[in-house]
Length: 139
Image (tube, rainbow, N blue to C red):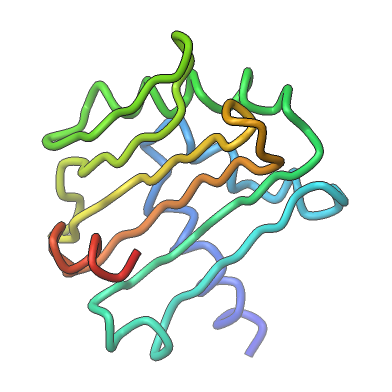
C-alpha cells in the first residue's frame, strides 16, 4: 500500500519536472502559513478531462512574486499559446498552453493580485486531455 501512495505522489511531480515552475511544487511551502498548496488527481478531476491540478496560493507575501514571476516567464518562452498581462512592467497575469508531454496538454495560469492592491498570488499547473477553450470555461 505504501508503494502505491508513493507512486501516486511522484507522478504529479514528474508532470512538470521539465518546467521551471516544477521546483515550486517540491513541498517547500507546505509549512508556510502564507501559502496554500492544492493537489488534485484521479477520479475527482477525470470528469473535467484533467489528470493533474496543482496550485499554490500565497497571501501576505508580496516579495514572493520576485521569485515566482521569472520562473513563469521562463516556462512561457516554451508556450505554444499565451495570453500575458503586464502591470507597470511586472507580470500581472499569464495563461500559457505548453507543448504536450506524454500525450497530455499542459497549462500554467499565473495571477499576481499584489500588483493591483490585492493580497494574493496564484500559480496553477494543469495537465490532461482538456482543451484550451474547455479549460478557460472552467476557470
